[in-house]
Length: 102
Image (tube, rainbow, N blue to C red; front, top):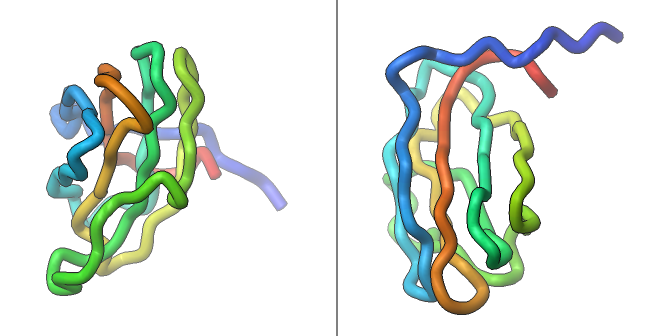
């Protein structure tokens, strides 16, 4: 199986500062991947889902992204929200949708 390189949707990048309070951003439903970049010094936790599911939030049991690292994760066609938080203190992060890379 071939994996195509991540092709970003230019203009979709969102910068944020994660804290121990869960937060969320809106994602482009038409894209299939999300690049998560953690430029801070704390672990970042992320979860992708649908905004119509009011019970979704982020927790330290979700997907961890180590400090000073990035990951690309696949998302479903109807997924339109990325939930995020830090394990302690704050950490700077960026989220960009696109296609491929996973």
